[in-house]
Length: 444
Picture 1 (cartoon, rainbow, N blue to C red):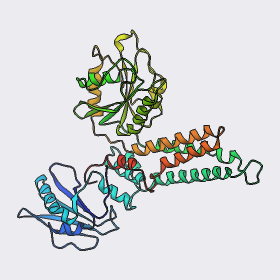
Picture 2 (spheres, helix red, strand yellow; picture 1 turned 180 degrees about the vertical axis):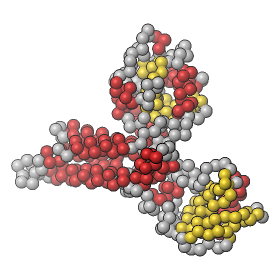
Picture 3 (spheres, one colour; picture 1 turned 30 degrees about the vertical axis):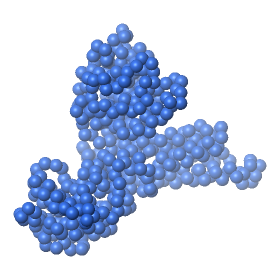
Picture 4 (cartoon, rainbow, N blue to C red; picture 1 turned 180 degrees about the horizontal axis):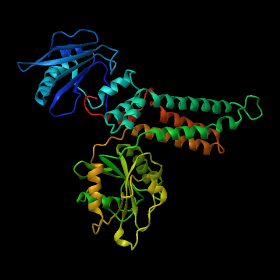
């Protein structure tokens, strides 16, 4: 978690690791100018400026350019100094050590990943949609992605989300006014006045979802499947170890277990869907829903003898990595994957026929995981996609509940508003903040 501590000063290298022609050390906070002054000369002016000078560290002086930005006119909204120096990893390490020397007494410390962006949001310089735009821009692979990122940075998505939230609030207010009146009262609100706008509003949120970038999942993959389809056996076979408990009866897995199946590739083994879950099973599935945001994509596991695709896999906003048929040694023919499931796959080659007993198909699945899930692809827009998907699902539940009880519809609209809370500049839930900032690297 990134904890924004207003009052201290943070330091980090803001350029990629390794040697290069130039490198940047970024300092932000109330002591930024004083901290930079310990290693830079001449004295830094308390104004926005570009200054040529020298850094002195370890008895050596080297040329340096300093950029100074005075609060609130900086990226973070705080005083910021950037030191641009020759790109020597040794020099950068020595400079950081000097800047952090006696750091506790001076209120200076090393920055956490994403903390510069977190401070920009905390100080009102960015909203979370713009933070996602920054992440997109950092990882843009073509001109279209870069243009989309710039649009986000300019507040385009935030404005659209705010418009939807405002309309949701108006509809909810109209609905709740009607609770105070009977049908015979002159102040009663006709149901169609608040119900009819909901379907078009859901379509608007769907369009916002379609505007978000899609990214191949990378790093960590969540296994989704019905109970007893062989998820845990598959994990053990891929890992080459009995890392997960396996039993014949359904419901054995009750927690999310993170297993490294090869360097840089981790699978989350999750509880499976059950036809008649008891209280403990429901608690386990609720845990799966709550923690699934840690993964960047889904590995959908299907029993070759009875391939039922879980509802969560089809409704989840997370991208699919692949579909895996298990227990293929027990059937003569593997059924074709349904159209809805095929549409979620990144490509037709992402269907794997496997057997944990015979080892069939495991080599191909391992290689695909290594090449794709082991990459450093960032799911830009992922946290916002999750929030918007939850919002549109709540709006659709409100439409379904309208004929049963308007009070239920009101509760669902409140849930939709909570899901969208924080995207367009308001205070945000910590879980959403964690997912936003946690994917940034140091110095960003």
